[in-house]
Length: 381
Ligand SMILES: NC(=O)c1ccc[n+]([C@@H]2O[C@H](COP(=O)([O-])OP(=O)(O)OC[C@H]3O[C@@H](n4cnc5c(N)ncnc54)[C@H](O)[C@@H]3O)[C@@H](O)[C@H]2O)c1
Ligand SMILES: [Fe+2]
Image (cartoon, rainbow, N blue to C red; front, side):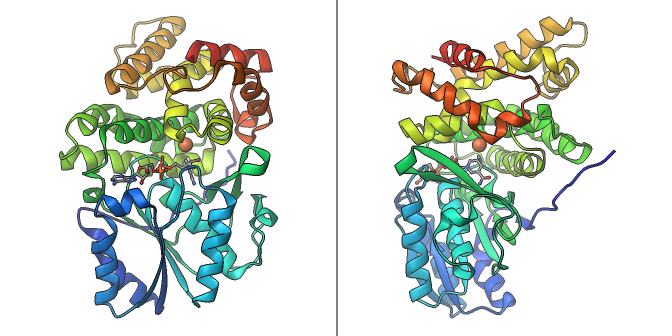
């Protein structure tokens, strides 16, 4: 047995823990804080109490509030210029994957020269970064525990990863109270993104025992809690379990990687600005269906983690049951098909070609052709 497993940041988990941020920055010995978020999180009333907690610790604060979904390089460079000019020492992100990934890259550029494109790929960030603090507000990406950031290169219509040493958070403050007001549709789609991370980490060619344990528990937590968190957002227990599930899925996939669903979701995000979770949710059932013959025992384990009665079924019937349950989950959560998500049909061949070049395709358990990917896209349409 051989594997490489990165241990995640120091995680503080629990209702209200985001208010400890002032204390945490002070303990680390920094004074000048750069806070990154987007307009939606600000409007939801999540930012101000955290800024107040930083102010109560007598810290100097500069805010960057212009993060965009599927964040483009320009947001990162604009934020980095502001942070450098302000003499910021430590970066705090408040938000979903878009804010956390923007902040990760701003933090990289505080100790490494621009442009960001120099750091695309794995372990290309050379200079050590200061500790970065991630405060997630969606139970989805797991970016608070992953060692990568996903940024959009709008000029070339693609997303790319800055991955590896010096990129991830040093400290995650995972406060489920911040997710109580997340609207139902964003709860649903970001939640299925987390489920996709867990399922794809489990079937990835890079799977290993430590990620398997995280992935299966994440699948169980998400399947049990996502419908309730979507329908009754104020249920703190369901929200806590979702945040825990997304965080565990994040630890799994930052090590085991993801597979074909993410290879398809990235170009859908870059070319059609489809929300990341929505893109994954639309294709996940059909990616699982495609991969099932290559990893039958793993699909069976996933079925068990989902609580499906698969014990006495043949491999083919297990796969069918898992796929049907994923389709039914999308339906229950009000997640549309790719057509309903306003993806133009004539772009599907381009998405299929892009997906073949994506890094996660390399980790897919079953070899695929561009025709296979197009068939998956057509089913998901
Ligand atoms: N770094 C990683 O490991 C990783 C993993 C998966 C995805 N991603 C990337 O993350 C991005 C997607 O992140 P996301 O799915 O979290 O969505 P997001 O950060 O784009 O947020 C989606 C929307 O929800 C709003 N929002 C967030 N939290 C809220 C709250 N608590 N209450 C009300 N509104 C809230 C935001 O304002 C935004 O409008 C994509 O770019 C994707 O590629 C990164
Ligand atoms: Fe994802």
